[in-house]
Image: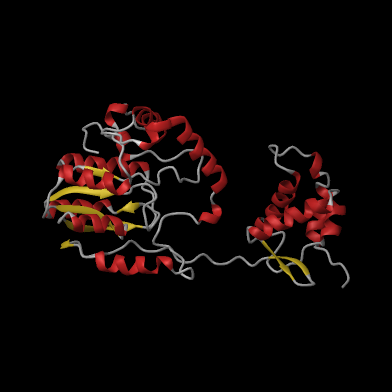
Length: 331
């Protein structure tokens, strides 16, 4: 098949043929080539379905190696900006229309007893089926974990701890660990001392202790809708009642709905995941977090903030926790 080229890419290639000499923040050469092509696609210079120059042709145009162009094309293919067609070459990929954004949930804002244990048990029965993708578990695939490195680190930690690693620890927990957690909390905007930290065996035990500290059987707990099934199980096991609050998939719990709910019902506590909630993934804006806290302070309602995913942000800094704004000890 004769080699075809994209005239626009060739024209732009002549404008800046020496990409290898350009300064672009220290990016690798193939990344600059990929970025160059991406800009042409974004500007509409390269259109959907248009064929790109062959790897050999583009390497000559840009005065870079064949392997550099190949790496750039592979990167663009992985990002779904271009596609390879058998015995035909690379083409600009059609842009898929974004699916409509989910609407805020609309549960019946009524107090209900929770009964999810049987359903959760059915989900766990499928956990041993290799054909089932376990979206119910918020853990990465072991294939993506640095298992060997983790094993080395755990072995080194066990060797350093010696016999202490095999003994019990007592509340509030291991002092050096609590100090490190207190330091780490600064990243979320919190100023905590190690004396304010209690270590537990995991998230669910922590939530269990928090709920039992502020509420009892029969009390009403306001939660997001939908909520993590483990939270529902915990509320059920403690004999408490759930009050589902409509939740926006982008901004988190709908404050107007929460405001109306706490005015109508005697809510003993709120249990929320303000940053990257499970399962919606919503992240409450900072202004909403402040408004949430103001609302709860006026009503003297404790907030149990589950910040388990706070560090899983895509930006350079993680979002602040609601606790960062707490001046009344309600979070």
